Length: 159
Image 1 (cartoon, helix red, strand yellow):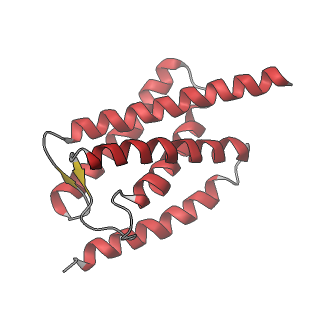
Image 2: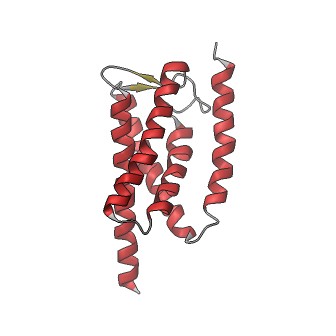
């Protein structure tokens, strides 16, 4: 039987995520935030699906039974966090971007570590650890940030 704590945690995160999303996209430039949201969702779902299929991560409890990945994390929480990251690094130097990446990735990895140790929401398998999660989170933050730099540059060049 599925633990009520896990289901309630997912429901609270879902409601929080929807509210945070609508709050975030109100800040200009909205099109950038939507692009970031979609890019991060796409990248996270590919990576998550890969690691689940390879047996490194398992999500025993889901809000959506038809998906074997954490839809809430890949399609809502992670992309919202990436929008925040891009908002605070929009005018940062490379050093500032890397420092802020650490400040965003470390709490995310620590939260995932806590969830893995104390709930049935995520389980690490094989050789997967919180260190792997940290590096995958940080690398995708940086990847999306880099892609947005290219997109903004290309858009300015077109004008």
